[in-house]
Length: 88
Image 1 (cartoon, rainbow, N blue to C red):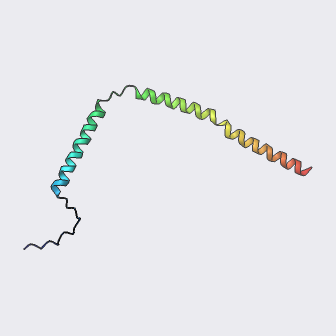
Image 2 (image 1 turned 90 degrees about the vertical axis):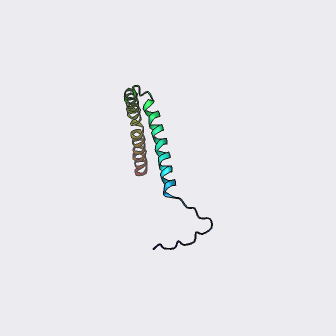
Image 3 (image 1 turned 60 degrees about the horizontal axis):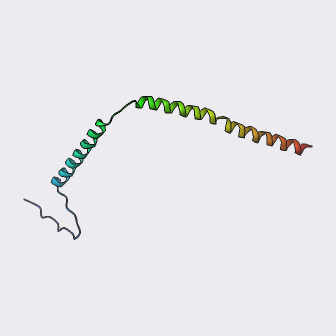
């Protein structure tokens, strides 16, 4: 015994499992194509480039650390001078 289907409202979209399967297969083929293109790219010496970038970043980080320290020392000196001038 089959159950009667409810009427389909106007503006509804019906997607069948066959259409879903076709879309999944199309996406699979696209991903496979992109994967093949990525595999064909020359890798070169990315590890060496990455190491060079790390060295350069570390050098920049070492060069920047005195700036906040100098700002803190300047602020502290200003506070000490202000307190000194208030006590006189």
